[in-house]
Image (cartoon, rainbow, N blue to C red; front, side, top):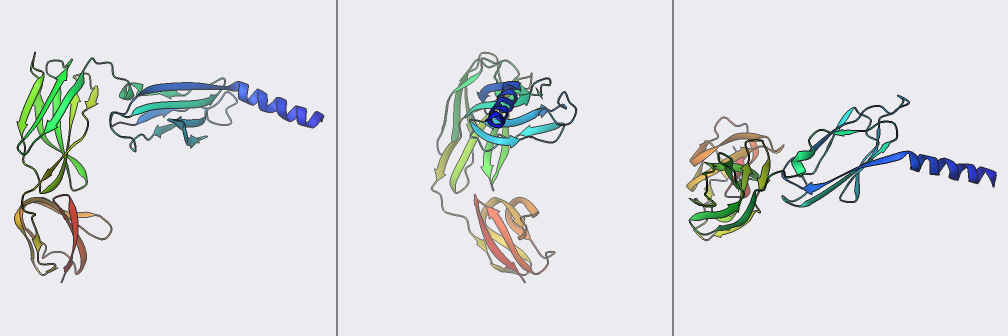
Length: 255
């Protein structure tokens, strides 16, 4: 009985010695970085556990610094991070501002049609910058940069869609480095689908229209990329390769 009491007392003491840091905000495309000093007894590191939106994501990291990966969250998704640490030491979050907006800026609307992107905002500062991003071949690609104009709150730019589904987002960056993202919008282009040929290739791949393309091997290493209606693949070794274009990936054989 005395043994059980002692164990309970030790557990209570351990729990009472644990302290907590809590951060709340929204995901804006960047991860958090934490300095993790030694505990007061110099035998272990300070952090006991890290929770992201109530889910345990790190347990007793044995390193002097670590990264809290937020990349699985959607842009503008709520973030709550709890860092449980030992008494007598304290981890330091290096960049808490990446989930805490200090700006009055926000996107009001973001729409798209067959020829244009249109968005409205409020609270922008002069000389802040907009980056228009298009999701191409599994990556967000910057296609336009605009500098904010004093007193302007509405923007409209022409855009050239790929065939099929097209996703866009706008990144706004203040001179201070503060970043905010719009929601992602999608537009389905109903033009004729571009094709490539041949599938058994000796020298060149041809497309039925101009496209952004990437050629990769079976290990997903990108070997060639560019824009055009043909690709010279004569230098590739014999084997199976993949061509990504118009937000789809297809296979071909190099003879």
